[in-house]
Image 1: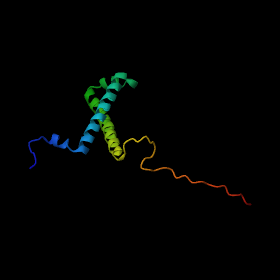
Image 2: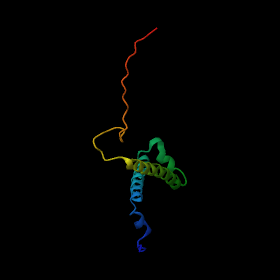
Image 3: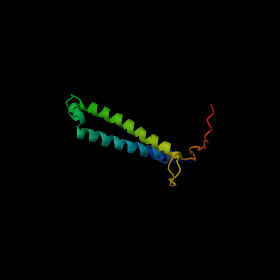
Image 4: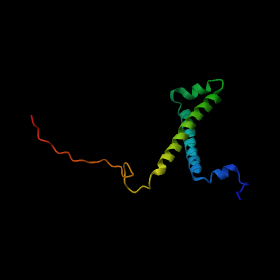
Amino acid sequence: MPDNHQPQATRLLRIPLFRLLAINLAIGACAAVLLVGGLLWLNPGHLRELIFADRTPGIALVLLLASFLITFGSAAMGSAIMAQGRKEDDGKRGGGNGSRLAVQEVTQRPRTR
């Protein structure tokens, strides 16, 4: 009999793929918040002054943060998904899965005119 007393979020976090995506989304969100905070702190191109000179600076901050959240969150989640097929690091670098360049010896042919 299924346990219906657990909240939906707790049941979802038991699924390994969902947990992987949630963790990587949180990592991407932290990176986005740090980047927006760094941009406001460093003030490149007078960005902070431009944002806060507006009548509603909250809208500009929300749009900036949301775009970075989408970008960095999806990049972190995508890289986690793409790394799923990779074996543990066995010291080899390169293509993985045995995909190596095929080496073929080429002999020189004598030139004929």
